[in-house]
Length: 148
Image 1 (tube, rainbow, N blue to C red):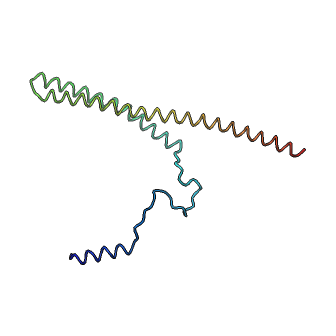
Image 2: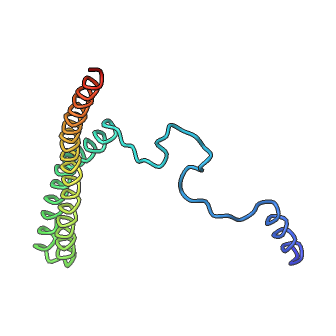
Image 3: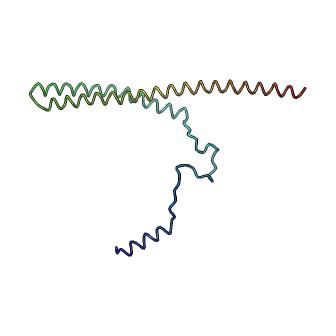
């Protein structure tokens, strides 16, 4: 391809579509249900994430423990036979334990935080429901007074 042809193709492409910035949101002219821009996460979504974090915690605890024990035994055996690889495998096993604990802590944090969030939202909903029903009763009282 010649340089002139390349320049011509670039110019044609530039003419066909204008360059513009688009924000990561719905365009203003697309209707929707009025919740445009709101983050919505349903109970089932949060429950699924919490369950996945809990399951990963449970499964990884068991499997990482097996890997750690087997690696430590292999490292000890290699070291006992005078292989330098034993010390290296021992180092890897220590790092594996540290990284495993970090992952398990993160999974527990996610699961616990979602459980706390669910309970907090339930408490907030109860409080709001009580406040709104109190306002409705107050409004009824004003309506009754207007009628007399």
